Length: 232
Ligand SMILES: [Zn+2]
Image (cartoon, rainbow, N blue to C red; front, side, top):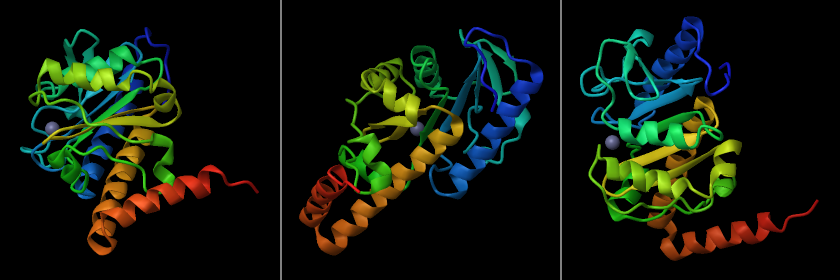
């Protein structure tokens, strides 16, 4: 996707490209059980515009949204293109993309099947695979109701200090009893990160069942010891 200066107004062709990618990734999230019909939303900042999935993309469209369904808004949340209403987690998306735009351009909120277990238990997600080491431990924020401004403040606050991680790939936070919010360099990178987090959660759950939680803790420490000090 093309990158624009953050205060530039994108052309309709640039917006169309972004809206097409968002519709594509919405379908992919749902089909790969990285979100459910009840929720999730995707946004991308392009110049001084934010493209975001419409409200009820899951519940009413089962994530079969078309590029024209994707809303285009200005940074003050005024809708410029698209027929629907803004996604219900608008606060988080706009807060993240207005605060961290120098580092990340895309936000995915999702209800990934395996990661939801961590959300339900209020457990941070430690890396257990090499592909996840770069993210460190993904934190759980204090509770705030879904769709609230307070939730946006909590999620945004936890990204502070992780700007370099966002610029390099992505960073995420778990909302208790709810789901995950992830901001990344690009939409491709952000989707990739959400899938990595859910795979990592799956490994911890399955490994915990099979070998026990202590063995998974030991495996995590062993990964750090071996990979962290590896020299060719
Ligand atoms: Zn949600």
